[in-house]
Length: 296
Image 1: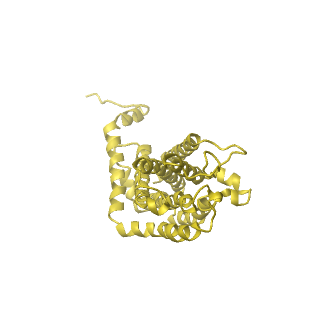
Image 2: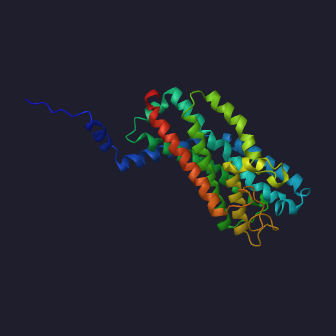
Image 3: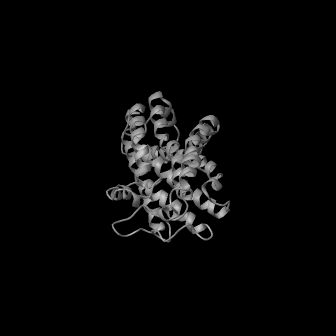
């Protein structure tokens, strides 16, 4: 009786044929559904995460709205602050996906996830997409309070803001995962997150226009992904609100934070930069995830 032998070189090819499109899609669907179930199972935690942005919007925004002149922010300060509050709302839930990735790895849950009939990169994309959608869903809850930010209830405006907010959530989730795949301890991730969260917001012009801050913050803002996300939200508000909210600031009458030298990049370019940065971070994370999979 003759035995059939498979050469070592044929092994990866045979294994690769085991991954079907249906299996990849089902794996992504399962990971996204898991994140959404986590969100729905903890309504108290969601409310607690929304409490701080709401306090900032109602207290900080309402208190300074009459003190900050409209000429300084291209409109009312409350409307200027609202995009920054939206970013604050999604920042923690988006980046915290990285913490769950680390804890799942240390507890053995990730090892079980990797048994799914899907490529490692696909599984990582599913984790990222699930975190992105849960963060965007929490931001959508704050979008329901648009009048508190001085905005009208207009479907096109809210959809435009939700689209930009989802892109920002995708970028933050990608960056968090890119760092998490190289981090073994959740404490290290929490420390870095705690030290970077506030500086990222404040150097993005989320609360105060960068034109009112020292000039050396300009280059930092140009490297900060939240700067592009905040500008995109404000420009969307300006473009989709009747009459706009600007008084000759930056591009199209709206106060902007990002400038490349003396040039202000248009909205489409800012959106493309944010998307490419997010995809680049996810690509780097996927490569590192495959490289370190043997130690998972």
